[in-house]
Amino acid sequence: MNKNRVLAQVNDREITQQDVYAFLNNLGPQVAMQFQSSEGIKKLVDELVNQEVLYLNAVEAELDQEEAFKAEMEKVRENVLKQYALQKLLSGISATEDEIKSYYDEHKEYFVKPESIRASHILVEEEEEADEIFKEIEEGLSFEEAASKYSLCPSKEMGGDLGEFNRGSMVPEFEEVAFSIEEGKISAPVKTQFGYHLIKVVHKNEEGISTLEEVKDQVMEQVIGLKQQAKYLDTTKELKSKYNIKTYY
Image (cartoon, rainbow, N blue to C red; front, side, top):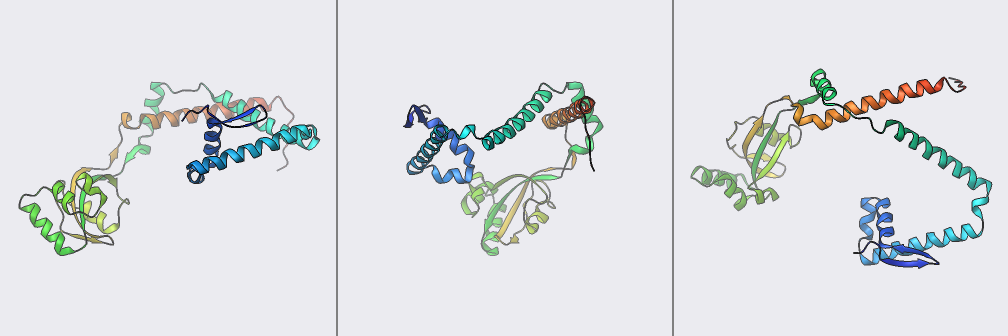
C-alpha cells in the first residue's frame, strides 16, 4: 500500500498511511496486532483525527502561551538536549582490529562455549510404538524417514531435526539421555511428559573457547562500550571543574 496515500484531512493537515504506520509502531507489537484489519486501520485514522483536532483547538486557545506549558516544554528541551549531547559525545568511537584482538586475548574466559549437541528425535505416544519404529530403523529405514512417517512433533518436517542446543534447553529426561549417548547413535525409547522419544545425536560440541571470528562482533561491542564509558567519565570529570557543584549526601 502507498505510504503517502491520504486517509483523512483536517484543515490543511493530511493524515497519510505513513502516519498510521508510525502510530502503530508506537503501540508495541502486541497492541498493534489488534489493529491490523481494515476496521482497525479506520479506528487508528479516527484517533489521529481526534488528536489533530485537539491540537488545533489548543493552538487556537493559545494553550502554548501558558506558563505551565512553557515549563513542561523546557523540561522536554533539557532532556532532549542532554541526550543529544551524550550522543554527540560518544558518536564516532570505534574499535581497531588490534584493540579487538587484545581484548579477546585478555578475556577469553568471557567467551566459553558450553557443551552442545545437535540432535533429532521421533515422538510417539506409546512405548510399544517407539520399540517398533526402532526395530524398523535397525532393519534399514532411515531415522529421517521414520521421523517424517511417524513422529508427532512438528520437527518431523525436517526429519526430526531439533537443531543445536545446550544443556538446560530440553526437559531433563530428554536431555540426560541426549547428552549421554554417542554421536551417531540412537537411544532406546525415552519417556517424558510429551510421550516417548527416540533420540539420535547428530553432532557433539565439547565445551571450549569461541574463536575470535565467532565472537568478533560481540568483542567489538564490548570494546566500544568500554571506550564510550571512559570518554563519558573523563569528559564529565573535566566539565565539573567549570561549574559550581555542591553535593549534600
